[in-house]
Image (tube, rainbow, N blue to C red):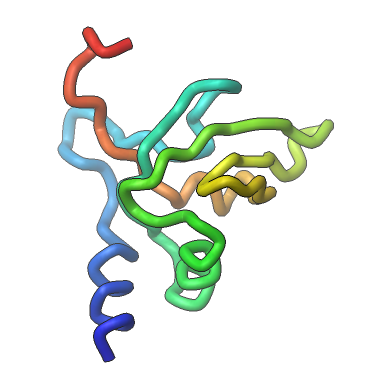
Length: 103
């Protein structure tokens, strides 16, 4: 099935991009900071559900509200707001910035 083949290429892409720099995740984003999703390192069923909600590689994600006491955090993606647990957000990797002069 084409969807499964496509999903497999976007899920479980591995860990850090290289040995020197650890890849950033959604959990690392600060309020108002924007990030572009690179890959999802989650079980296929959970990755599929998040992709249905708009968490697709290449899409911009913006952190919004945070629950008190370190609970779920709300992320804006594809016109919606979705709350994710910190451990889930820590497995959604962002694209590396191409240059520091863009900020």
